Length: 149
Image 1 (cartoon, rainbow, N blue to C red):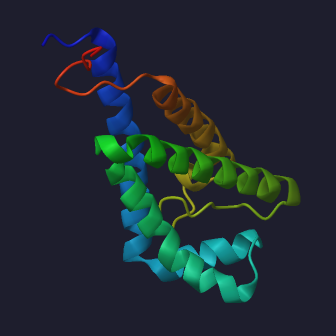
Image 2 (cartoon, rainbow, N blue to C red):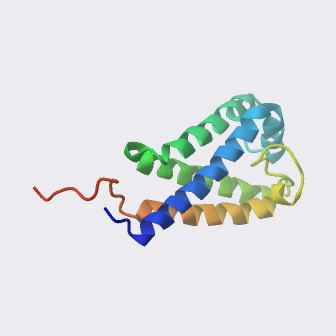
């Protein structure tokens, strides 16, 4: 079967979205304490929820990112990533408005340019558009379209 051009684009979009979440999740898994501190700085969760969130959230990101490449789970994974991005974006907006968002902790610890809340907000909006575009596409199996019978 000959692949159509948008299928290559979809694969690139999937790779980009997956790479972002795999890297972000892995960095947080490697240093959960730094991620917990980032969550605490944002003042969005009660103290008792910070530790569990710092442990569980990165694993959810990694598993959902990997599931984007598993056809039976693709739609659910994209919906989950889109939902996470929506929540993260609202949290970043609230942190910026309240002045508590100096560093988002999205990619582990650090206070550099890529860790700034305003940069993370723009990145999230791009990722939301990416995930939404992938969700709107009709996915076909690599074997081709199903027969009408």
